Image (tube, rainbow, N blue to C red; front, side):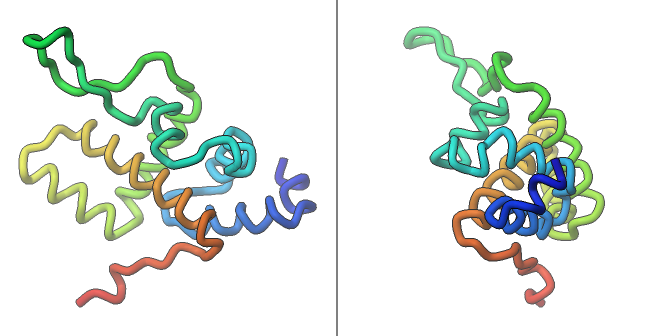
Length: 144
């Protein structure tokens, strides 16, 4: 797959752009390019998040029963597991994501819910940099 990507100009550019995000590695970039058909299959990051099983849906039955928001179980679990590893990697190596994760945990929020939010952030960043055609810029190093 890597050889095919490096031969095609558009795939190569998108592969480079995806690798500019901390937490997204070579395998994730290749998987994203395959499942999104070089980011042409899905209109937005939200639709892709729904396809991956990361977007929460309200649990409502009628007008009186309202449960917690839940994610669907009818999803592509291979992408979800890859994005889970990316989120954990981002928590370890990306200072911005690490600070966000620690802030949420201090507030008493659920760890898996926070990891799900980080997965959504990574997907949003991937779609944004492909749309802009510019590498990801870490804004945390400019703050202070």
